[in-house]
Image (cartoon, rainbow over the protein chains, first blue to last red):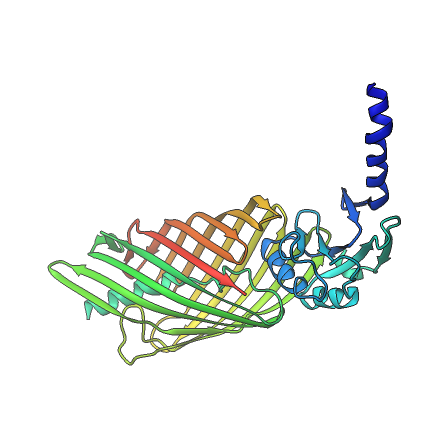
Length: 132
Length: 257
């Protein structure tokens, strides 16, 4: 009986979860990259007011789903990344987000997206040599 | 004349050197902020070498603002309103007035490292008297320069600031501020947290040395940050009168946008 429940319900749900949400290791933390989300690894993002500044700027981008997180943006200052929630089937301009972060004084090292919900795509940027 | 000499020697050693908002924000282009602070210091006793002279209490409200047009270039202002009560034997004097406006241009060079950010700062500043009358706390035209270094990781914060002031009507001042702190709590979801810092403040003028130290608590939530500190003197000496075991208290709240 218990075995049937596992096969019929729990396993399919778990598999669905694996398909639509996948993970990456970022600064020693495992992060789930969801469909309709963009994750940016940001060097220098260590202080609370850095977070506040970035949240304000990134949440003003077009197609940010402000119903999620803090006006559509979650910032982790301990592991130095930001998550931007997108409206369903509407992609934010990632280059605009990178420009905004760079102008705020930080450095984007990588960008993770999961547009299809099946595969994580990564864009890496080279860190400045004197700032490692 | 005695009162004037007393006051001139005292006040210069207690300059608050930090820049709004709380030395930290805003770092982003186009950011601005303001803060209000309440400062209190004084003592029932003041000393002149080995002599006990009188009492002196000063309360000051500060209105301070900042605009960041690039993370490396900012402009700040600090406008004080002083309330001073000074008693010397049977003579009591009280004075309430706006003090000298301080305008500064912090220039910063930031570097980002793995899990740490730092900046070197160079800050020219001017002190502009808003009224002609010279009191213990105001009426001095001055120019100053500050050299600072600050480093912050998720868990630790440190600031070192060496600065000097030249005045038109009193002795030059040299100062050193050191802030060493930890960041014991932060909630990413609400951007709420707390810094716990230890502050060391040293001031040198021609005839006096003052070193104060004490704890600082800086709670914050979203775009609001507060600073509460109490400092007590560990070294007070000099040929001019100054406080004896006087506490310095500072409470402030700042907003950034």
